[in-house]
Length: 160
Image 1 (cartoon, rainbow, N blue to C red):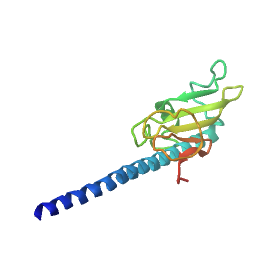
Image 2 (image 1 turned 90 degrees about the vertical axis):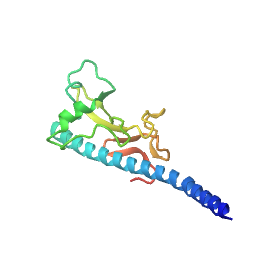
Image 3 (image 1 turned 90 degrees about the horizontal axis):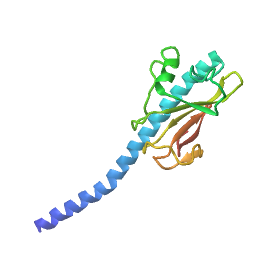
Image 4 (image 1 turned 30 degrees about the vertical axis):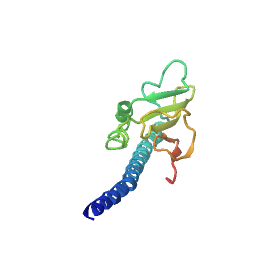
């Protein structure tokens, strides 16, 4: 009789673990998505404020380059040099999963000024999506979170 109670306790405990662990993992990923989105909003606000002052999202490496590229990737340290301390106190380099954010500017005019930008978190898997900027709401934690020109173009379902 005693072993039946022990076995029942083990079964109930295992059942709770089977339910609780996946929910805990999902809650952790949702929290990381929200942190990444908050970081991205803060970075975009600073970058847009700088663009209002400078009339471009350009960086020193892009300005004056020969032949206008379609898009240029900007290192977090380079963007940090442009934005801190004037536009933000410190620039987050990595998302909540520990992967560096990706920054790009594009839509260059004839003088090399960039008219557009994008910020990307690579999601839980730390790899770019196969289809860049697929857009809209996503359900997978491994999907990228992409912000461009004032709004999220790819984001977790349920996020605003």
